[in-house]
Amino acid sequence: MPDTGTLRTSLRRGLAAAASLPLLIGALASCGYGSQAQDAAGEKANASAAGGKRLSASEVRIGYFPNLTHATALVGLQEGLIQQELGGTRIRPQSFNAGPSEIEALNGGSLDIGFIGASPSINGYVKSKGSNLRIISGSASGGVKLVVNPEKIKTLDDLKGKKIATPQKGNTQDVAFLNWISEKGWTVDPESGKGDVSVVRTDNKVTPDAFKQGSVDGAWVPEPTASKLVSDGGSVLLDETTLWPEKKFVITNIIVSQKFLGEHPDVVEAVLKGTVKTNEWINANPDQAKASANARLAAEGGKPLDAKVIDPAWQSILVTDDPLAATLKAQADHAVKAKLIQQPDLAGIYDLTLLNKVLKAAGKPEVSDAGLGAK
Image 1 (tube, rainbow, N blue to C red):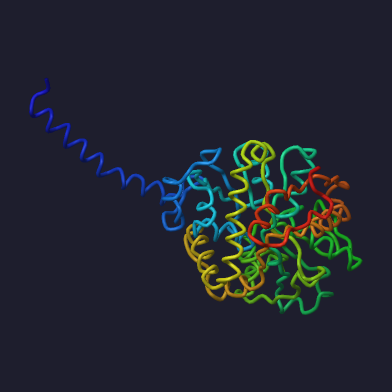
Image 2 (image 1 turned 30 degrees about the vertical axis):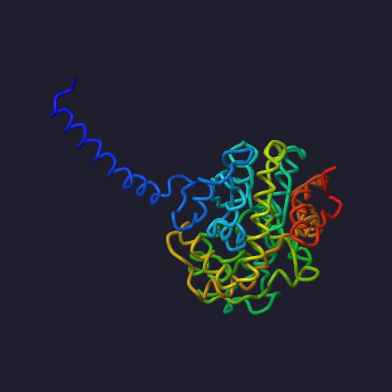
């Protein structure tokens, strides 16, 4: 039997370890270890996950970008609206900076569901020959602008010979800009970006500094980057919504791993219930939703967006359950015309079965896959 001194020493060590545990947990959370760190303020539904009924999977890994065009994800996670529908099945959020890396995670099995743009969705589907992903819902429309230095560019014709940034070769904004250039009758090599306009592929985080330094004369970018450029003296020369019928086009989809969809349809349906409720809440409470999205961005990047940036940016984005499938097909055609991809076979890229089930149960109209649904 241990002596009294040994027992006292063990007890003191145990109490010290217990006291330090919250500090260790807090330190790990504040470091944002990896892309999966959860901020305590944002995960309002953790209690639901701990105490609710678990679905067929213990967790679901959801990817998104820290962009306002991913407002459904930002607000749905921040307010716990998606987690509420999942009960004891926990969300493991993962933040990405580019579509290709999110597609790679989905294809590699480290991601289950993702919020992502049209072009990465198309590329991911085509490269896997239709075997790895499905688009299961829309999320957002709009939120893309051409912002320029007003001292150098006063009209659209002035773009010729100038340097204009896009986020990445072949990404959704890059395709849109190359298509717009071709419709002007100008030519640009899609690989190098050189031609009548110099297309400079620049990460959205870097673009504001490049703009201020004069290394680019403007940018075709999503929000909030567009409004950041305006706050730095830029001028909006074109809003991409003006180029589309009814001023709507898909900027963000929700995609799922086909394997996860096949094995856990109940989890996917619960996530969609959460996104539909999130979009409804955003549209009913725009100011609260804007603050919520900003809080999530602050948790991601360390500080919230200034009002002069987030206010105009937020107004230009429409959250929607409708995937606006016809506009995705048009964007694919634009990429073909720009010689970025071969003509893709998109038959089966959509599976809106669960979304339309959720919409019908909520008394909302069903949405179309424009003939590109899974058979």
